[in-house]
Amino acid sequence: MAYLPPPLREVGARAGVSRGAPYRHFTGKDSLLTAVATESWERIADQVHALRADTALSAAERLRGALRILIGVGRDQPHLYQMLFRRPGHRPEELGEGLGRVRRQLCGPADDPTADRARAAGRFQDEFLAIVTGLVGERNAPHYGALLLAGAHGIADMELSGHLGTDKMRTTPDELVDTLVRMVTDTGGRRQAASSGGEAL
Image 1 (cartoon, helix red, strand yellow):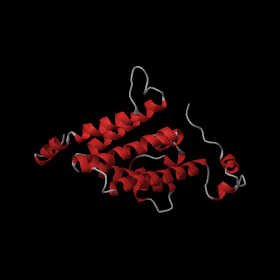
Image 2 (image 1 turned 30 degrees about the vertical axis):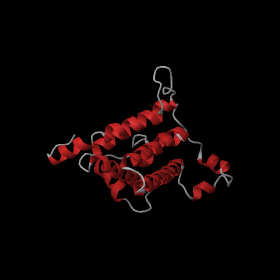
Image 3 (image 1 turned 90 degrees about the vertical axis):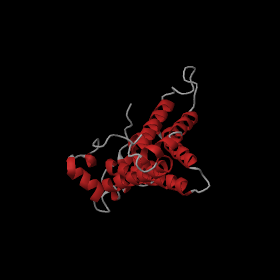
């Protein structure tokens, strides 16, 4: 069942403030959820940046840590995870297609909540791809980055649905993350040769 957020007045009541207080800061629940998503993306990006800047970690350890951060959000805050990765265009503030929507996301004013969310999510992607680049090079980073994120999403979904650790699967999220990282790391030598030869793996 899809997560249905409580009305904004109920949010204020649960937060211990007057029921009308949230309306002084947000125009409605979509505005509130956009702010929550933006703050969450910024926090995740900060965590991934800290991993990237940690010179005591190997490139593989940084990547392993970044994937575990994402899967941890799915495990500990599944409703937030769904909100972060939902398909664009499913809320009123995201309606609009084509160049107009892209322009709002990339060039919107500093106080545009939707543009702020897009920038925060983009910052996470930049930090994550920088880590991936350390293993496969800049040319191949988008391809492997997409593959790794798809794998992380699958691991998070399978864990939440209870399909991992069963008699049939007999594995854990951490073991799957280790396998993903090892598979990408093992391409190190081959991707260097392919990149110098003008081919992407």
